[in-house]
Length: 70
Image 1 (tube, one colour):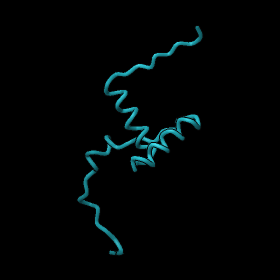
Image 2: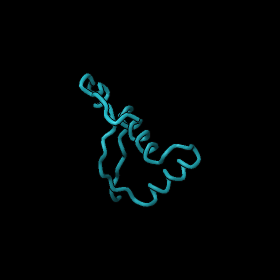
Image 3: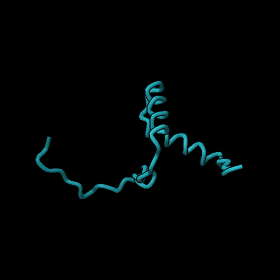
């Protein structure tokens, strides 16, 4: 490993905007447990599975059918 590196000719990452953004989201224990169990079967981190699920919902414009009360 070198003691110093020359970054004077470096470029910004053109894909940096496409990287994931960290947020805080509150999920109940059952939801986390479900995705953690699924991740053990599939071999992907549970956070990635949640992201893939939400991305699929957004891509297909899925809407949740909420009905409060009767």
